[in-house]
Structure formats: C-alpha cells, structure tokens
Length: 416
Ligand code: UDP
Image (cartoon, rainbow, N blue to C red):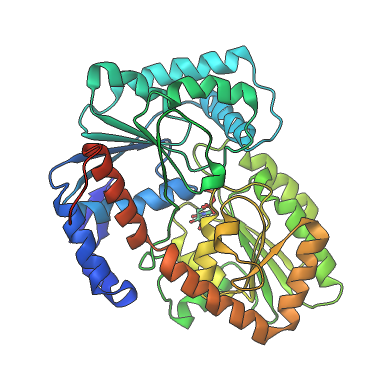
C-alpha cells in the first residue's frame, strides 16, 4: 500500500514485519487498530525533517494509516527567531544554562497564537510532540476532544524558569507521555511511559548490499582501509562533537583508525552552523577525521556509515532517547555511548554495549572494543536482540494504540 505524507510516498505493508517480530505481534496490532477505526489522530510537531521526532513520525504515521487508523501529521510554523527561542528552551529543559528573556517568552506566545489560529481542526485525539507546539492546548476549550503531550526529552532537571512557563500548558492536557520513568515530572495529569523505536524496514535500517555501502563511503571519500569509528548526529553542542574528536585523538595515539562525524541540520535548529564550524576547526587537516555535512533524507547514507563502522559512538552530553544508538545496535554494531538520558535504556553496560563517562572514559572504551573484536561482536549481537524485543516500531505502535484507546475510554477495561 502506498501512503502520501507531505508530498512523499511511502510503500508500507504491516505484514512485512512478521518475519522480524512474529505473526502474533502483527495480529495484535490489527486487533487494537480495529478498535480505533475511523478515529483521527492529529500529530503536531515542529519539523518534517531532522531529529528523532520527525524520524519516528515519518514511519509511524503511514503504518498507523495502513492499520486503518486515520493518523495525520502537521507541523507548526515559526521564523528563525522563534526557533532560536525554542532551541534555548530545549537546551534549558535538558539542564543547560541559557539566557532566556521576557522578550523570548513573548515571542513564543506570539508565534504559538498564530499557530493556534491555523491548527487543523480535525482530530479525535490531538497528539502534540515536544515543547515547541505545547501552547496549542489553548484550543482545547472550544475544541474539546482528547489531548496528549508527548515529551521526547529528559525534563527531570529542567531550568526552573522555562519549566514554570511551560507547566501551566502541560497540565491542561489529558495525558503526558514520557520515554522513561526517570524523565518525567510529577504532574496532576495521567502519565504514560512509552519508549521510542526504530523501523527495521526503513531505508535507514534495512539490510544493504555491500556495493551500496562501498559506494556511499567512496562518494564521501572515506577509505575503508582501517577501523572506522562513527558518530551520526545533528551538529549540536549536546552531542559533543568536539569531545568526540578529542576522544578520537587519544585513541589514535595507539590504534590506527578513522573517525566519521556525519550529520546535518534540522529546520528547527539554528545553532548547527556554528557547531559545525567549531568541529571543522578542531578537526583541522587530520586526514583520519571525516566531518561530513549530509543533506536531509540521507537515510541510506547513514545506514551505510553505521554498517561500515567498526564501532559506533554516541558521546552525547544530554540525550532524549538517542535513536542513533538503537539504529547501530540493530545493525549488531558494538556501541560506546555516554550514560545519559535514554541511552541507559539501550546500553546495559558490558552486555549490549559500553557506557562511558567523559573524554578519557570514551577513549578507553573505544580502545577496548577496537582491540577485542570478539567481545565487540558479542556486545553487538546482544544489542540487536535487545532492540528486537524493546525498541522496534511494532512495539511502539502497540503502545500508542493502547494509549489512544485508554484516552478514548478513560476508566474502561479494554477487552481484546
Ligand atoms: N539523523 C539524520 N540526519 C542527520 C543526523 C541524524 O537523519 O544528519 C537521524 C538519526 O539517524 C536518527 C535521528 O535523526 O534517526 C536522530 O535522533 P536522535 O534521537 O539520535 O537525536 P535527536 O536529533 O532527536 O536529538
């Protein structure tokens, strides 16, 4: 079946997932979805491309449609100044110090009000993702219906000023959804815990022929003559790309290897050009460091970089979930990642990968994996099974269908 969203056509068949997760899982999804037949689920976030939220919605929405649920996806619109503010909110909610002024809060209100005026009215459940569109809840009074706020970030230690601003909006929702218990806050509304997922059949994760991998690496001038360490991430301070280079330089003193830092920009992220410039300066002319600016929709390219890697790195300083970790684990790659946010759900240290602390700790873990290929392979294989059981899109769809049913039928016992 072909589904078109934002001008792009997706060929989707839910039964294609049966060989990966089993028939009973797919039967259950069909059964749950049949109870939501005809319901409109209106998803709203702030970008169609770039970052984990857009990544998930681009796979989730067509699959829900294929299951017969009328899932839709719209975005709010803002100018650069608005995204400067929402980026500051994002950083501050993750606990980073940001100067946020009264003018910033007014701009947020002003742009949100414009978006409230043009919100697509249709929806039985309004599923609002992350802080940028949170104020859309002001439409609930006249709109009615059910509203859920899906928070993809770790707000366990937010900057109080930003949280005090957002909380009055959040508490008007019928429910809040967090990725993990540790990310949530005490709220007077229902809370659901649903971790994100990856799609094993997307271009980013499906099996690739070796020729495709080779041609992508050749296109980006990355020789495969020695071990490759890769981090795929938007150029963002919280992904610590400069720290990645420092750790690599320590590893490179004793192990001959290359570093690939691949990433692009997101339309709702105004900081990336500055970060990229700093990364390029730090990389200098080192021929073993490949800083690659990749266009949006580089799914096969990212897949190829991850598959060509000896070790995948995710040295984030803060993280919501860290889809890139699940993507690498699904490819049975050994992963070194900081023990922050949702990474700790994915990497059980010394079993599904290695968690690391700081630059020296990261360098140490990288060296350990580069010099122990059997151990690295064992971690990668465990990681793939951990993702199969916990972080594939079929589990995620099931959780969302149950969430929608629970919202439509509060207090009911749902019988299957
Ligand atoms: N990604 C991408 N292009 C890039 C950088 C990242 O498509 O230039 C993808 C990456 O493969 C993953 C998602 O965007 O699927 C990033 O999600 P993650 O949770 O790792 O981080 P976020 O960007 O949401 O903070």
